[in-house]
Length: 207
Image 1 (cartoon, helix red, strand yellow):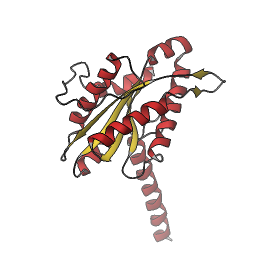
Image 2 (image 1 turned 60 degrees about the vertical axis):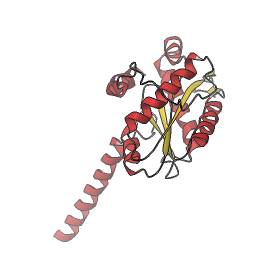
Image 3 (image 1 turned 180 degrees about the vertical axis):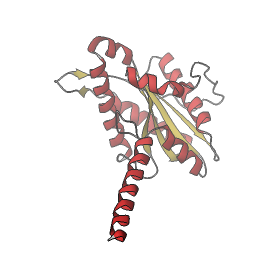
């Protein structure tokens, strides 16, 4: 009798631990993975690996004009599209999408090279530029600026994100948000980034 009770309690505890682990690895708004999983993937990396960094052009204006509920719905729709591009909620074991904060997302490419990363960035940019139909029938067309970076293992996520961030803002400055600009030979470390992830909680509240 007591043995059955102990086993039942153990099962409940294991379930709770699993749920907690999933919670801390998942973005609560979109259901995507989060930055923690990016760091874990980088720690396990072997050989040259890459990632894409992207944000939505004019997202603040969408929130201002249509309201934060519409903004949240758009973020969820973008997350669904990124999931389709990476093969499922947890990716294919190699690639996966993650939400960093606000309207900023990342795609972990796993082992890759410069040419492949550039091609994938262009594919993602084109897919995200297709119109979105949101709840209530509102149709929006939103472009995304995409930057790519590749680094040799052992890789530091901060370095990859900084390189991809520089490429992403190069795309914005070029006013060609539907095309990915990637892999600068000597990317400047963008001081404006300043570890924006530290503001993740505040940004998600405002999103």
